[in-house]
Amino acid sequence: MPSPTIIFQSEEELDFSIKEEKKTKDWIKKIIKQEGKTCGQLFYFLCTDEHLLNINKEFLNHNTLTDIITFDYTEKKTISGEIFVSIDRVKDNAEKFKEPFPKELRRIIIHGVLHLCGYSDKSVSAKKIMRKKEDEALSHFDS
Image (cartoon, rainbow, N blue to C red; front, side, top):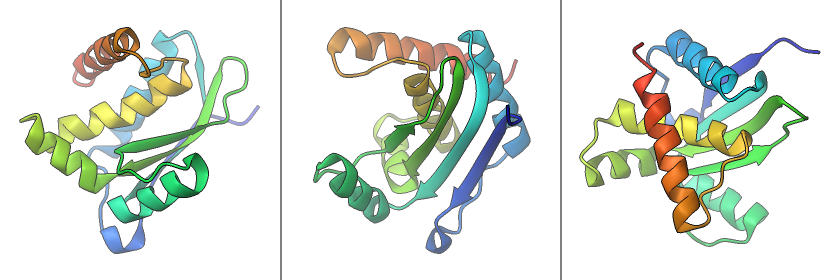
């Protein structure tokens, strides 16, 4: 079995990088372990609204902006996937919800992981659970 790998890559024209990358990767692995899973291969692609909209149209037939799209390659309890994050949406959401950008980015990063762990956000009750799990995960970032 391959060793756990978490990669962050930015769209070339975006010129963006994750601050505290090692700490963020360790945090992601910690949350996955708390969920009773193991970390496999996670690839985060940080991109623009335009790029994510194209993916949304091509793969999901949705013509709407979104902050994240997750492709799940999880096998049994080994969490793996590709997670596409629109930095434009994260910035807008941070302003809208009056949150610091780094915290909103971490929320979206862990949101993708929680999807891979089996959590949904398709109903009101599922969204409440997802938000609670995100908040719990965020509280562990500095602990």
